[in-house]
Amino acid sequence: MEFVNASAADNNRPIGVFDSGLGGLTVARAIATTLPHESIYYLGDTKRCPYGVRTEDEVRSFVLQAGRWLSEHNIKIMIIACNTATAAGLKVAQQVLPVPVIGVIAPGARAAINSTRTRKVGVLATPLTVRTGAYTRAIKTLDAGVSVYGCPAPSFVEIVENELATGAHLQERWLQNGDVFDTPETCEEVARTLVPLMEAGAEVDTVVLGCTHFPLLAGPIRKALGPGVRVVSSAEETTSELADILRRREQLADEDVAPQHRFATTSDNIAEFAAAGSFIFGQPLKSIEHVSLDELGRY
Image 1 (cartoon, rainbow, N blue to C red):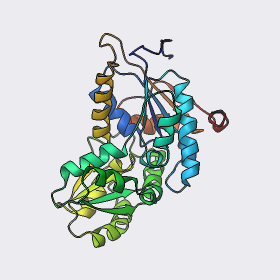
Image 2 (image 1 turned 45 degrees about the vertical axis):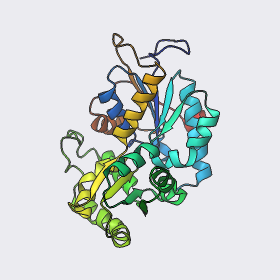
Image 3 (image 1 turned 180 degrees about the vertical axis):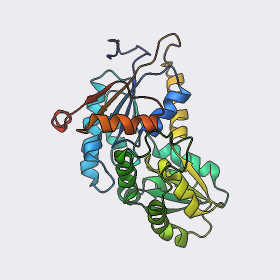
């Protein structure tokens, strides 16, 4: 399946979505649901996942490689659907790439601000995202009086990616079955990871999931936090911002053109990516290609 060649002004060009692996498909799904006429070109850098344990310089270079690669494939806008990649590479991507680039941190920060009543917000994210302080800056830009408590979760991305790789639950749909990842082992690891957050901010009433993989662990996370804490994700907020940008730029896709959803991955196992990706995206991934790290490295 190929996208039709289009001029730079063609509104029917795809939206580029980039993530370190499979988690960004939570954002792609929200886009496909909210903007059903839009085409999507998704790139998951699964082979180099997880990003959260890498250096900022490494992740920044990965973002630029992915952005240049997607830009070569005629996208009209790029979503960095990875909090770690947004924290490390959003600014430079916006400066360097020939298309508009938006990340998931600012929308997630807005969702947290709109949710909290105690003005005490927890950020559950990868170690690198927490270290950069990107969420703290984004939240305090919106409301300087909000206290922010960062909680690194170094194992969560691997839990999600490894569980999906087993294929054990791929006939389920995680949005309809929130218990798919609710196993005793996962609940124990989630509870252990959240101890510092709960100890640091007794009045935290909102926790933002600062990684697009984490919504798949929402069940165990909510169980560990308790009923008095709201859990917010950036996927819907990011999609809302995307829709506003496209509307203002008069770049919404024509309603009479059938959207195309195309996927690429650095994983060597296309079948595994297809099965796990379909589980998250909510429909079959019909067009998948392999992109080698050597190819990305040329960008």
